[in-house]
Amino acid sequence: MTLGFSVETLLPHARVSGPLRMGLLRLAQSEWLDPAPDLAARDAAFDAHPESVQVLPEGEAPGRELAQMLGADSLEQAARTHCEDFCLLTQDATSQPYRLIAAAVAFPTDWHLSEKIGKPLHAVHEPIHGYAEQLSDGVDRFMDKLRSDEIYGRTNMFVMPSGEPRYMPSLPAEERYTHVTPDNAGSVLFARCERETLRRLPETGAIVFTIGVYRTSLDSLSDESLECIASSVGAMLDGEEARRGAPAYAQALTGYAAARNQSRAA
Image 1 (cartoon, helix red, strand yellow):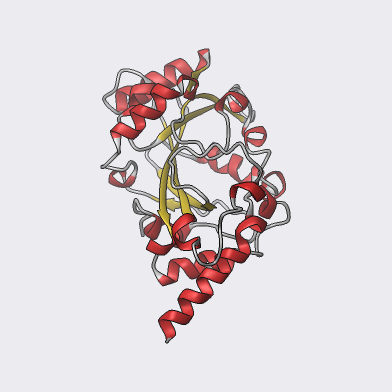
Image 2 (image 1 turned 90 degrees about the horizontal axis):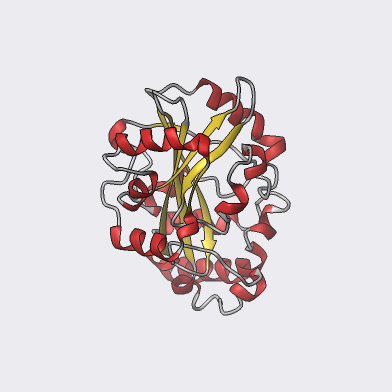
């Protein structure tokens, strides 16, 4: 079983509603990174946003190790020449929480690296409702046991009113989705999947967390994928619906899905 490198192949493995879960799959080395990155888009994002790369002193050695592994001369060049954003995490001491000590993030999904760098994982994930109660301890245990010969992957999904790879909205959800109707939802709403992987570097012991972003409009999805997304509306955890803006697009999305289903059945 593999995650693939598209919304269609990622969606079956994504948590679209219900309790938080890691949902990890063991990956082969060949499945770690996307073999076909859009280098022009990566360069444009890093050129426009130099703050997208931040390295703390303790992140310099892991950054060099990762760069050398990928045939690059720096963490930034590694991220410019691959589809994925790279985050590096280490512990200050055994049993201490993992902290974000270096990152190169061209395509964030509504978060600022400057607000996360240096923080422990539970603080990095603080905006995610239920993370501390349902997932934090399990994530810490998994990372403690992760070996350098293992690669694991997971994915999540968001519905966005934009297909841009870098999604940093400035307006509240009710304004971002105000133009969406059941008639146009297929073309103006996008499924956005983050393909995430975890592996440990053999020399420094730092953990590499990668994020690859994939987007496609709802009208280009298969019927099965659209149904998966439509059925998730209203089934998210308390707090997650609002954080993801679901109340602002739910009626339009479900109306579009119902109309498409009816058209197919006719």
